[in-house]
Length: 337
Image (cartoon, rainbow, N blue to C red; front, top):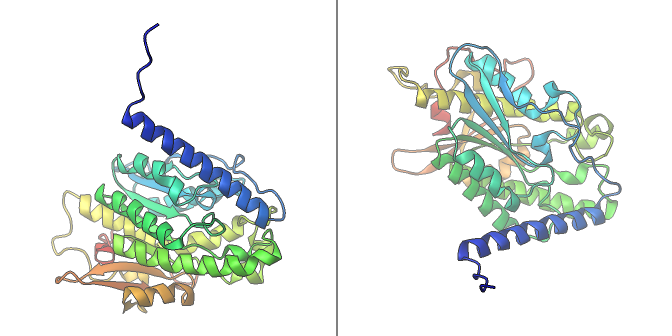
């Protein structure tokens, strides 16, 4: 019988990666069993929103939804309540084109474990990507700085592939009723710290950031959490989705402008009118603080001709203001350059 060949370096790396992923998943499950009062919904009942949405005419825009259970929309039971469907329908209406939805998000994902999601999407025709990640990292014994650095690497890879990227900041997971009382102070501190670090990392990597700071979840927990006490209810997700819409629409118009064969001769507008008239400029360190002070605000990286990075903060507008831009508004590319 011929001797067996030793495994190649590539196969050894693949085996190490598989074992590391299994160890991270096991660690996450063990950590959450310690801090949670009851088992959580696993997302198996969430309807699949993938496919084409919107009008049948025009060139489709791709929307990739990446991240954890908050991107899967664990806690809803109707397809029109999912993050992917709500954002896709808004893009379809705002850009008057079909939107092809691709959901790579997985319940239980962490920043470290979502590399496969990024690889899958980065290799495809670009469009708009939303990344919702961080809640599962909060209670793990991991460095939050390293976690944010991994997020930056994910954004850079997507941006290198031509994607417009929107990152939502880590919400305050300690507000959930399912979190044991003793774990809430730790959860609150680490949620806040991770949101700040994610903001800086994502902006420097070229993504827009949406603040998911939401005190409403503390004041109205029964209305905004689903029965498992950890994942948002349909009303809770709607709150998050509405706040992400301005950044998603801006990203959609930016992608359309950059890929259009006949862009506006005068170039994109210097400030997207539908974002409101109360925007102001910040440094990245200031944005790390404002992410908590401005619930629902959108933060856009802006690079000066000299290469200096600044941040345009667009506060969340009241529901009486129109959330969507006019259909024929040129891409709001300047806000995300």
